[in-house]
Length: 265
Image 1 (cartoon, rainbow, N blue to C red):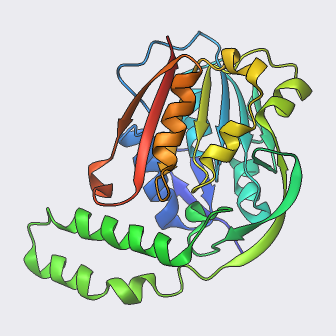
Image 2 (cartoon, rainbow, N blue to C red; image 1 turned 60 degrees about the horizontal axis):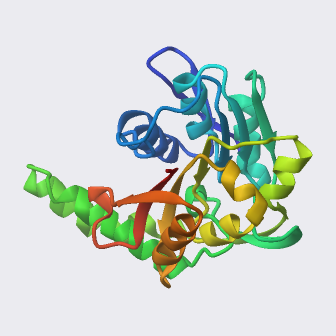
Image 3 (cartoon, rainbow, N blue to C red; image 1 turned 120 degrees about the vertical axis):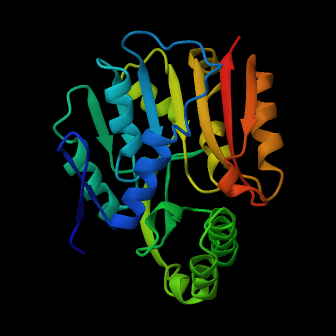
């Protein structure tokens, strides 16, 4: 599959699998600043950042722009998506790319990959549930449209627009633990742990050994709350001495998607 290109206001371009996904991710991260919590304490001048579930690297690009001098470790398991990640960040100083997932144990396992909707791929991907989230997102975003005819047309064509988006492939990928990667790269702290892994968030956090938890300064996690994961993850952070804050982007109201911020007190 040939990669697409999106040109940014500064003239640079981003490689991606689809322009619509790149547009969405760029708006979410750069324009809406979905992963930035205003209540957060400033990060150190040269922070260590883990981007878990990096996809094509939009958050990592945001991180190196927001915090010049940051050391960024980006993890993306799907080879096709990792190719775009390499094009976007392979030449960036201070950025280390890993074609793997993170989880609660070192293993090889199959990931569900949506070639036509890559950003919702994951170990816990469920085509029916994922489609329902997208349908609700579209309904929410069309509510404020002033053009009634346009709104009706979007909703009328919603099924046909999403048909084929959740066709899936099973791909065997490598999984490592956060603690193992910290040890491998001689990392004594993670100032910001960003996780967006479509339902596998708790397993990523379970890959942090007890002795490593004090090294986690802050985290921002997109949580798919389908079976009580939000409460479990929030409880895990609190049990390790971190305060938490949860919000839901308005476009995702009435879905299971939330963003959780945690910070060491």
